Length: 244
Image 1 (cartoon, rainbow, N blue to C red):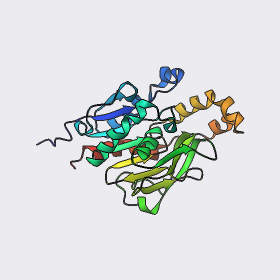
Image 2: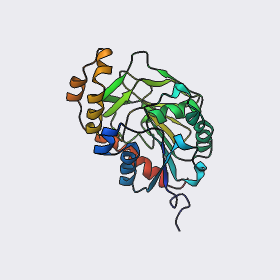
Image 3: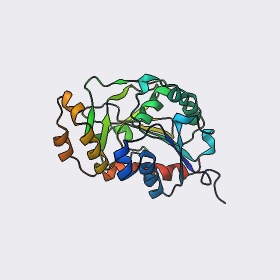
Image 4: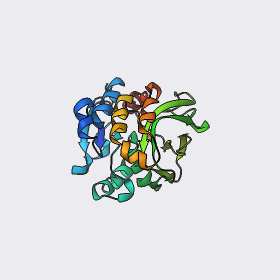
């Protein structure tokens, strides 16, 4: 008999959109995430959180919260409206994965602190290192101790929620991944980003990065595919489809 959880789609909670010129060529955040979830055998539907709070979290097999060009610390009304919704999702044990903005929003919702990183932006293909606590983690435990991932963020989780387990860090960012409870994760890196998508971001960010003393062209030249990071999405889909 089919498990009640497997009969439900995964929800992609869309908190932002990529730039129009990227969307026209490669699709949008929810398209990239849906592709990764599909590789894990999970159907997905998207809901734009900026238009209103979605249905109850336990009507879905799991939830993925996208990245955004917004800033969690701005406390936009649509974003703050998601706080109790995410608290409920975690309390009910609904498998939850926050990516970049979603990672930060999940941490904020559960009592963590989000702010601009004092060292500025982290952007490019970066090396992420698992912590010892991640060895047996059901989502990140299968990754190598060190793996390449795409990253672009000005804000970060400056303090984890109480009770959270730190799962990964980089040279720039202490809190690249965490788990809270048994079935909720945040990842600062982008498992859904291809190097092609990040290259297009870098083209548009050249003036901004130059003001921070960074060479966008050099960062673009160092980009590479990140299959280990990308494996997080199909693995999350598989976990979400398992009965609780």
